[in-house]
Amino acid sequence: MSMIVPKSAVCPYCGNTLHEIRIPFGLTEQKCGYTKCQEKWHEGEFRVLCFTVVSRDKRGLGRNRGVMWNIRYKTNGDEGAIGFHTYRRGILLKRKDILLLSFKKRSKGFFWKKWTGEWDKRPSKLFNIKINTVWNV
Image 1 (cartoon, rainbow, N blue to C red):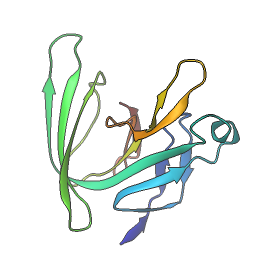
Image 2 (cartoon, helix red, strand yellow):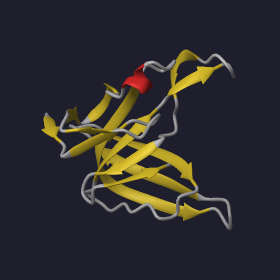
Image 3 (cartoon, rainbow, N blue to C red):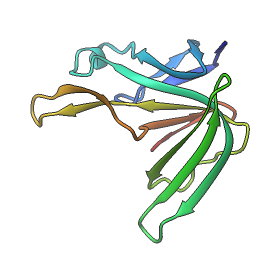
């Protein structure tokens, strides 16, 4: 099952919003259409996880230590959980919200970066479709 999202995935590298694209529920790969992003080592490729929030738990880790989010989600018949740490305290999530998480490619090297063949486990961008808002994680 696919759905058309009014403003969908956000590129975790440049912040470009990909408009009116077909995003299926679950984990997919997308490509940024911005030319400068495509010329870099990552070639504008990123992963997108689209899901509905079943439950969420937000725990503050103390002053100046950020917040730990634990989210249980549901895609097409599959359920899972994801947890991540962020310094953003103003993220708004509710049950039944539809979220898109964008994940970057993992790199090695300092001056000349190369892809290791792995993806970051921590999302870079969080897009809440219900309230049409994007946060850097």
